[in-house]
Amino acid sequence: MKKLSFLTACLMFSAGVLAAAADQISVDKPYVRLLPPGAQTTGAFMVIRNSADKDVKLVKADNPASRVTELHTHLNEGGVMKMRPVAAIEIKAKGEALLQPGGLHIMLIDLKAPLKEGDIVPITLGFDDGSSKKVDAKVLKAAPEAGMSHHQH
Amino acid sequence: MSERILLAIAAALAAAVLGLALFWQPELPERPLPAPAALSGGDFTLLAANGPFSLHDLRGKVVLLYFGYTYCPDICPTSLAATAEGLKQLTPAEQAKVAMVFISVDPERDTPARLKEYAEFFHPAMLGVTGTPESLAEIARRYGVFYARQPVATAGGDYVVDHSADTYVVDAAGKLVGKIAHATPPDQVVLAIRKYLNQP
Image (cartoon, rainbow over all chains, first blue to last red; front, side, top):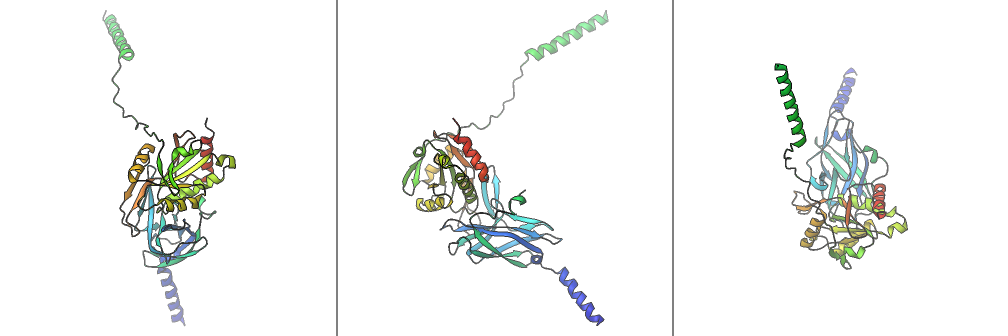
């Protein structure tokens, strides 16, 4: 009996230690921006929070609606906006990463079919420890009202 | 006696200092002038879905010009949506005196028909136009717009277009008068438009 409880404790302990990055991640207000019919690419935005004590890196994303999914950012150089792919998006320990228009975003490239307002795009986020998390992002014409503005720096 | 000489020397020195202060005009170091404001703006003719469009067709209205491209998944939609929302917040009388034109600097991919669909998605009165690479470059130079095609290692398409993300404001007389910065929220866009609408 004692052995069993010891074993249970061990299991629980290891579960705590080996928790996947994805388990410590929560995602708020995920959405995909609705673009005009015929648009081939669009962006997905969200707030990714990390409740763990160590940094986590988002290293890839995937979704069934587009042929390619990439992590991108924008650089504003003297009023000129430059969009560039990034290898990873870091989410600090006990911190958050803000994916929003004009900055970091998940880019859905080469859409297989036009998206309609209200569609749900399941996006799978892949982290640097190999774990992943699926979020359902709704297709919206404009950013969700609450929650985005007060996160701005 | 020596005191007097000292005093005289002191007086002479004081006079010299005063003289220098009054009459010495050191040559000022050459100061680089700020880039000459040679942004002449001015008229241009491009192509819309229903034929040639000239800026002077909109004489009498405040015109908002945005330079971008429809493959732009984020920056252009952000700017255009904010501007469109600002336009919608104007009174009908004010709306009648404002126009919005989206100029594609990616004529290789953006046809006038595609631009019409794209611009009208944001606002039914928004006009989408483009032209030859040469005419676009010439207009961009006059308006101080920067854009550059960049071969970027992205799996989607072969290139992205870096571009100025500000909205350029042309007054009712056709003169380039200002800019509205990228990501200006709609209520600020309204204030900016009213500022130019109410200019004498």
